[in-house]
Image 1 (cartoon, rainbow, N blue to C red):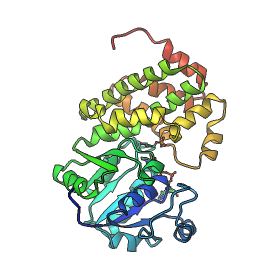
Image 2 (tube, rainbow, N blue to C red; image 1 turned 90 degrees about the horizontal axis):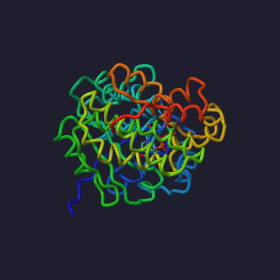
Image 3 (spheres, helix red, strand yellow; image 1 turned 135 degrees about the horizontal axis):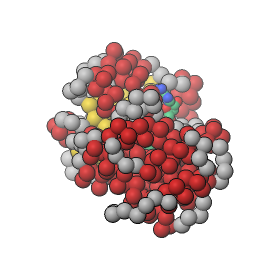
Image 4 (cartoon, rainbow, N blue to C red; image 1 turned 45 degrees about the horizontal axis):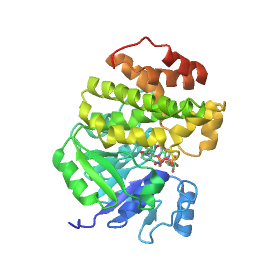
Length: 333
Ligand SMILES: NC(=O)C1=CN([C@@H]2O[C@H](COP(=O)(O)OP(=O)(O)OC[C@H]3O[C@@H](n4cnc5c(N)ncnc54)[C@H](O)[C@@H]3O)[C@@H](O)[C@H]2O)C=CC1
Ligand SMILES: O=C(CO)COP(=O)(O)O
């Protein structure tokens, strides 16, 4: 098998996913992990474990923990941003100030709160339209990647040469990476599956059963593909890892934080309480609000997302949200 030249990778964001990717890539590359909380980083460096966000995974000795943002940025051949989506714009803006020419990947999923922008649109606003950049997305629970369990994800970039180059560099037997050029399709898949996973959690939590979950996943995929195509993405992308793959994982896997939000809502917990105890970001909560606005602007019909938004942000209760979906008129599939 082809062995890539080791590169210096700086990962920005020391939560579950940033730590897992840093751990995975440190098998073959020189990786440093930056986070905004210096005390937390000191503990990681000292214990070789990210107890707060990725407990139980011993980090490789070669993985360097770096609290100096500028030093992390300046000593890297690749910047990989893995903050929640809400931190992407600021992080990229700072990176651009410090080291503008370094290639950039991001691995956050969602629509920006307030603007409804996809991650690559935020990047284009901050760096200009044709930066050397792309997204990592697909079905990948952090802890499984960190433990080296087999995983396949997508690296999408507008520039096919860029995508192929970084796929060849980052691909590993247990973290298989597939190149794609459909940024819109890949990012819509990653953003909206979190909203559908909240619906699946609610349905499972209320005991509606496996048939109902399969229906939500399938009709959810139809919504996702409709929006992606309306925005200029390719329908076939949604049949792949970044679409169906991530949707199935997140709707059915109990490691999903978004699915857990739905399960807890079905138990009667309030959203505030759920988010307070979750300890991690659940991007579907803010994306639900934005996707409804985006769907209206794009004339895409998205009843499941609308029901999740009403449940999360407009005080509709879980049973009424499901009943609203069941009361829809019959239609062609
Ligand atoms: N955990 C997972 O399995 C996966 C997560 N993702 C995506 O990766 C992104 C990050 O998720 P996780 O690491 O799981 O979240 P997390 O909740 O585990 O950790 C978030 C980390 O980001 C830091 N942070 C928050 N706001 C920040 C800001 N403005 N600037 C810098 N750092 C900031 C927090 O201090 C924390 O260290 C999300 O968009 C998520 O959807 C994608 C694939 C898998
Ligand atoms: O994106 C993910 C898996 O691909 C993680 O999903 P959650 O954020 O719901 O845990």
